[in-house]
Length: 175
Image (cartoon, rainbow, N blue to C red):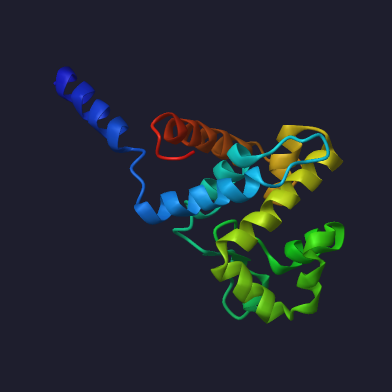
């Protein structure tokens, strides 16, 4: 019985990282965008942003979050990176290349967040950089992505997904 349990555990661990081609496409797109946006020191955050994408939407599997019945759709967390319209506006005010977002209505911006993986990844990457520069600590920056200063459960989920990202890179499924 113990042997069968070990075999079952081994088989489950081998298939635990199974991702659909669409999820791998979303993650690779997010990584490619994040690689192109360095912080002021030249550091890029593709692994962090990829792990956040897995944590937030399971790599694009769940693109609408925090939506409460009878509230405006524009208050929901949207897209592969689960960005709220208010967060996108905050980032656009701090990033010159994204100022054009301010010309969009909330509904238009929500639609773009929901359907444009590259835009979602650009906003998310700039947001991670802003948080990292403001908070000066990786833990606090990642906690901030989920709307808090200290969020151990969220940080731990992101770090667990960081391990998955590293395994996907090692196996050649992501670059």
